[in-house]
Length: 197
Image (cartoon, rainbow, N blue to C red; front, side, top):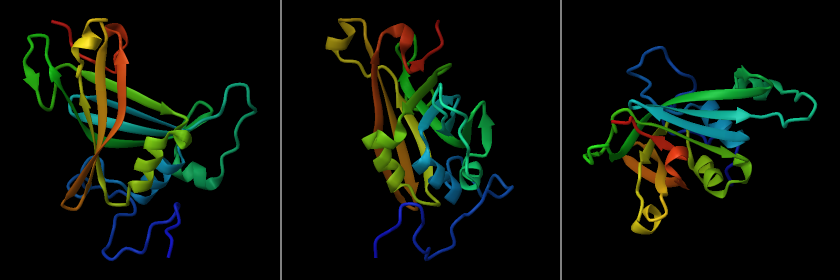
């Protein structure tokens, strides 16, 4: 039997449907059915991180110049936050930013003072994002992992920096990591910014 992309298969064990009020029951990044559906239907997906906390914003957008978009009841339920003419679902996740500090000391998890941001516009047409969104299941725990300044000599010779964004998916005892985005940019336009000395 083929799986329908907008429905979860019948669970063999109880799975979360909506967030509870206890933080112990809901670790950061625990996906509920509405989260999974929103991530699969989003027009734009944005990722941010600072101080060990991250956010994934799944957004339905209205194109500039178009008439106002009329959102269905399902879209309003999946994307509950109005942001201008758009609708957004915000998912709190854990996030790590690894990299060298200004003193050239390596930090595996929390690069002091660093922030990171990335965005996927046209998410329905982004092959890697579509694959990740199709892979996600209710009950998965998602974590963002940035690696700052993974530059090579060829990049640094031109004053460029490479920052990578990985998304980690934990399902029970298994963990998968996907390379979601690689960005090569000049120092003043990087996806990971660190505190200056």
